[in-house]
Image (cartoon, rainbow, N blue to C red; front, side, top):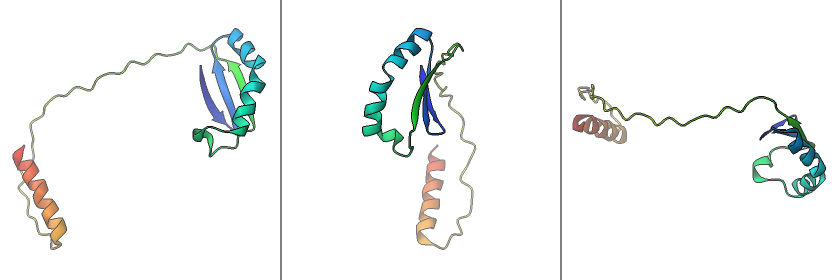
Length: 103
C-alpha cells in the first residue's frame, strides 16, 4: 500500500480488492478527522477528496547497499599560492592547506 496526492486528491493504492472494499466501508471515518485536523505534512495542500484503487503491479523490494569505504590516496599536495588579501579568507585557505598536508 502507498499513497500520493494529485490534483488535491489523496490516492491510496491498495494491493488487494478486499482491502479496497474495507477502505470504502470506512472512508467517511477517515475523511472526517482529516478535514478537521489535517496532518502537518498536508498543511500546504487543500485536499478535496480521498480515493482508493487496487494496484495489480508487484511491489518492488529494494535493498539498501552499504557504501564501500575504500580508502584512496590523496592526490593533492597543497602546492598553491594564497594571494587572497581578505584576512578571513586567507586564514580559511591556510586551514585547507593544513588539512591537505596532514592527509
